[in-house]
Image (tube, rainbow, N blue to C red):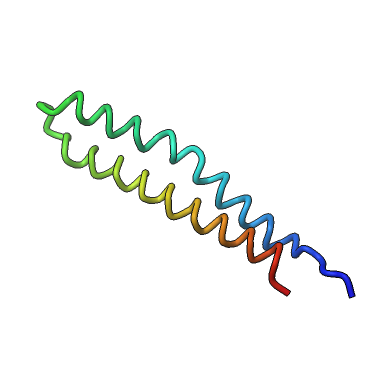
Length: 75
């Protein structure tokens, strides 16, 4: 019996990584912008938004890679 890749699970992992990629660029840009405008009243909320975008990117990358490995190697 040959092993087959679960294509639906693999595509779900690719989708997680596709969502994580823009967040990986947006998060640091928002954090940089927040640090450049520290005198602004919205400094703290924008900084929190950037940190959440970076954390979401890391989480989605981990989840996507884990899902892809599961699709390739699980039965």
